[in-house]
Image (cartoon, rainbow, N blue to C red; front, side, top):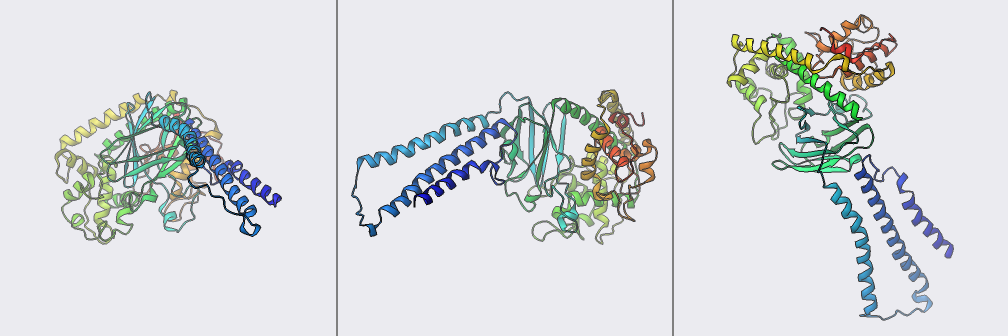
Length: 514
């Protein structure tokens, strides 16, 4: 019998000792706070295991050696003062021993003072908006898992439903303060590696903070049941060294200037119905299909159908108004700050002509600009608006030149460019050109031995930066930084047997066309 008791003791002791290697155990994370939370978790686990061992050990021993068949007679110690004191004091001491380290950790977790960087995080159905205080940088971060994977027509990727188009980028070794709120319902920003989990409540600001110890990519999710697509609201944080983070800030300023220039220049462009429909379909699938469904049928009683909808079939200005400004009291968000004028014009044109609506209406970016300026939709931009747009475009182009000096951008090795480019390609290009670069015959061209990929570098840079009108090839100058464009171009020119050996540097992209 003693051997069985010894075996049982070994099992009880071995379980907590091996818990650190168990895949389902809490991870240590990459911050000092997450390490303290992990240590606290393990301390409580050990205490619970010891209590369990003692309690169950006494129970088992009593059942074996003090059973009735051996003639044992139960002792009578009713109202024993010593026993009453013992089972009051001992748990009290245990709880105090657990409360002291827990209180210290909780106090540290709730101290966002003396932060080096402050970021406002706004949750909305179903995306995150990040705004860097004093950096003039803000963007939306949305799910980038291809729709085909969600629908089950393609194999699930490694980071299925845990990948975004634009990750939150943070520096290591700096205290980052988070201010969290929401546009609509309650969300919860949760990144396990940071031990940060804080609710984002509409109308309120909650605070949290982190200090990351090592570079890497860390993933999380919305941890509050926030509606139909709660499971499609991931969080991705990219932690960079302080020098790389400074370079990223410079790249973002150029990216913002490029986007402003592209948006201003688009005001004077007139696209065909086919071009607008092609671009609008992509935007609709990425931004609207989650609610209104890919076929426009919506969800009865929740999200309205767009097939023959009074908004879609009615005046263009009403359609513009609801897309730009949303509809209070419903899940319809305002997209004026989320999409460019060109993107809004494209998606409205697509909605008015898809699923049998066939209105024939063509909405141009200039119509969006006129509507925002006068609160009325007009069919042709006035000369004053066109002149103002042209001036704004010129200013934006000048700002681009001032924002980033090509010589200030880093010079990377071929291996670094290919490694980074592969990641950019997988998240940005693979949905059309496929992970193998083979494309989809008749829809998206193959990049294997492609004339663009194997031809002059300047032509490759040009089509990545400015796209190709009349096709699904978008302009990425407003979506990717010079470093990312350089990396993905280098990757494409060296992957799948292309093997050009060429390394395109961020400075080459930044100076293209100058």
